[in-house]
Length: 400
Ligand SMILES: Cc1ncc(COP(=O)(O)O)c(C=O)c1O
Image (cartoon, rainbow, N blue to C red; front, side, top):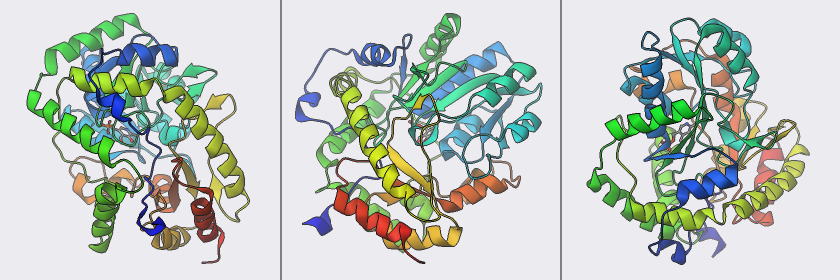
């Protein structure tokens, strides 16, 4: 029954039963070939990958202790920086965008800055020119946060390779997933060795965590379908919204503990099989996204985000900006629980999460806040059919 269908908020690559059979692990090799990238390093999450990257860079520049990140990004970034004992300095975004604002970035970076984190949100390639230039001028490193952008390219080259280090996420819903996972990439072979050495030194085997993730991956394989997603995604979402907790509804309420363990052979094998379908999956997602962007552009007042010239997105979802926060709230009131895969990307700019108050500077970040209040995401899952998409367009384009 249509009413019971639940479209996931992002286009995850659905697993098949055959993916779950034991298989030789070739996950990082398969993905490196697909991306045209040097060897990739697998970690247990994108956040863990970021921690390993920060460890390696800190060893190179022990006197630097500040990480500059966009004020509109995943709370896990703030949690990871804090966990490393580093200081987070936020940089406001460009007005009406999530890219780091070049002027604010210049002001935020000094000789104490260890790393700048330009972030490829929504599978779209972020501006790296300004971060690279500021990094060169101040001696900071650039870590490309490509957690949402596995498969995105600039000039034909995978994201993650222009900065010093890049990382991707393999979390549930992020295209290719092994429930939780992360990948590190760098074109600098010395740095690659250092990342491997850090990982070998600090990441434990922790079989309990791996067992838990394996069970969760089985659960994902079983439930990631429109007929069952209501159980795993829709019901918790509705419960959280009912108690007035949008942070929990979006899943922005992350624990302080960051699991740290090696990824086991079975999950790597599952990822290997699923990865074989990734190129076709990304191509189909891009075609669907492009067609739907044309329709969205016809709606009055909406800002629709597309690929910058010379770049290719990975298109997990479509990101739109409503003309006002009130209109965004009204659209969400109609769509968030409609089972159509409409959601927010992050509920707040980082300074506005109450639970992060002890880990995030309280500086005003007006552009990031405005972006958080007006941005909506529309699933790019193949399960969102044209009729469902038209329902969404009717709300986004209608008077409110
Ligand atoms: C922009 C961004 N950075 C970092 C992360 C952390 O990745 P993971 O969930 O794999 O730890 C995420 C995950 O949602 C993200 O969206």
